[in-house]
Length: 257
Image (cartoon, rainbow, N blue to C red; front, side, top):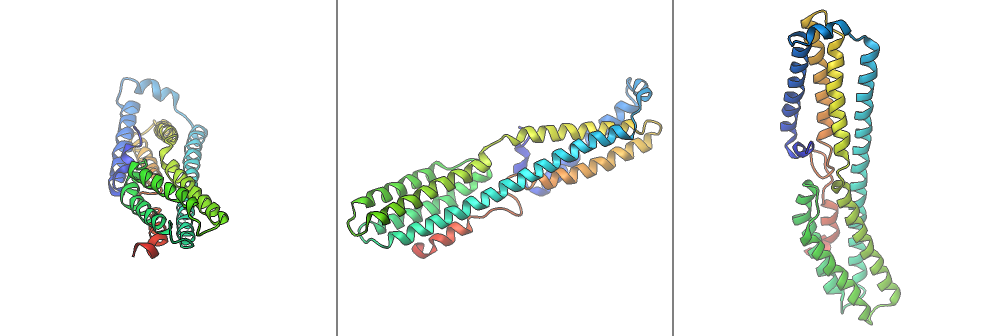
């Protein structure tokens, strides 16, 4: 549930993060200065080492999440490149036969069109497309049936089967990059550490309300910037710098014209 807002426009994610962290900062400031607990808290002010320890954990979690996000984007890009190369190679190999080549190339074009039109929007929603899966099955059937074509050798057909398998694996990898939602636990931990760092930051400035408020606001703004930059890159197929289907479109441009 914590990741549903990643689908918002980046310019909407930023004010949402601001609202969340400023609201939590205001609540923490109220607890530390105006709530019935304030008198007890002022007797347990925390020093700099405590803040450094908690803030370091927050920074490390953010760094690990950024590294994982960049790795997922690299894997998504590699999967698309592998898929487009296999599509192009299969199309070229199909030209060695006249009996089944037309059917294979038509299936390739239909699959690529389905990837771009049907599946790519679903990748933004972190799922695959059943229509694209059916188009892929039709492509695999066309390659399988080419074994009955006597116009090309068994070696050529074996190469075509290998390229078709590469397409299947690349598509699976492409979908797996966004379909695995294990990152929601990392995001939950990062938010909790952010709120805890706000609290510890405020505990270091219990002598003056203005200093407490300013310290919490400064950290909150820094945390918002860091989390915003992470959030807009969470899905490699979404955002300002995204993996596009252009390579797949170019791979079939020769036969789709």
